[in-house]
Image 1 (cartoon, one colour):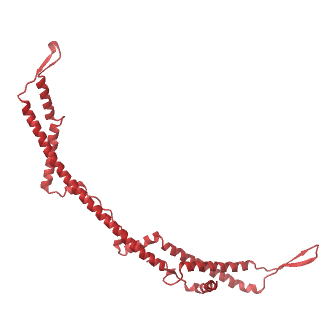
Image 2 (cartoon, helix red, strand yellow; image 1 turned 120 degrees about the vertical axis):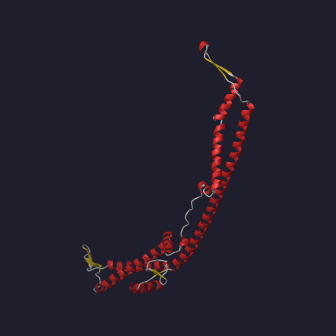
Image 3 (tube, one colour; image 1 turned 180 degrees about the horizontal axis):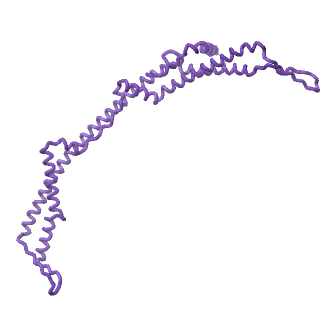
Length: 287
């Protein structure tokens, strides 16, 4: 775990550091209050009508001059300790955040912990990809069925050539003569046929049957391919779900370990703050 050198195995807990910082604040405020009362003069007060003089303010003792520098140094030392302890508390709090944990995980991944990498979302399998796995013979059969269905279907479709010709045959069988125009300009069309209705219908219905059989076989092939696509995608989804669950579980384990390490971290007291720390600690222990 990476953290600043203000934290370590030995030192103060967050609670203790906060308590000492508060004690140190009380100590320097007391010194500052005393420094604020420094006077280099006395003041006498006299009410003219009474003619009596009263001493209302006394100047500070001259010995106070000698204690100014030590007092100011102690205020500075106390404030330094407070700033250091507050920074340690801030660092400890940040180490417990999600942001800090994510940075910790990133550093572990950089060090080779690939098990903490978030699983990538796998793309689904398409119909075309499954179709591409067919043998050349299977592909040829599929294309053949598509072509035959398209060809026969368009031929016997109500708008197709066979269907239109059959419709016209029955119309002309019913009305074999058609007169267009009148008088001398009249045009007389007589329709005859060497085909019988049975012959035409026999072929028409045979083509319809053939179309249905071919279409059924094509639909079956498509359905089988669709099933393979669905099965492959279910397997991918199941695998992705399992990988994601495993990743989440690993992160939970890592977070528990991380939180335990963070909890154990203490705020280290450096040597150059040791003297003022001891002094504040003594005051705190006496309370």
